[in-house]
Length: 119
Image: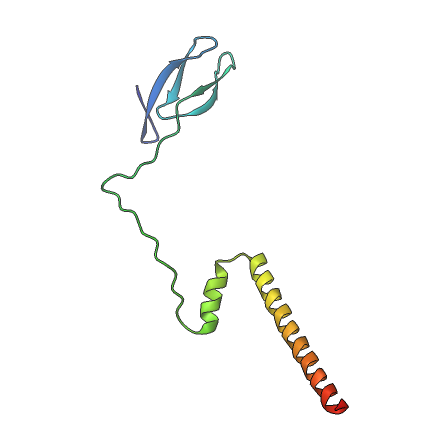
C-alpha cells in the first residue's frame, strides 16, 4: 500500500498486534519498540538497517599527519589533537624537569664553591 503525503511516498507494512491481533500499519523499514494504538501493548518490530559499502562507493584513506611550517605551528598542530588536560600535564612536566635541572646545577655549583673555598 502506498500513501502520498507532502509529495513523499511511504511504503507501509501491515502486521498483527501480538497482544490483541489488531491490524497495525507501520512504515516499511521501521524498527524498534512500538505500542499498539488499540490495546497499548508493547512489541518489537523490524531490525536496524545494515550499512554496507557498495562497489560504486569509494572509501577515503586516512593520510598520516605531516606538520609543516615553523616549530610553533607544528607544536600547535600536534597539540590541537590532544585534550586540554593532557596538554596541561605535559607542560607542567616540562616545567618540573626544568626546575629540577636548575636545582641540580645550583647544587653542583655550590659544592664546587665549597671545595674551592675549603681547599
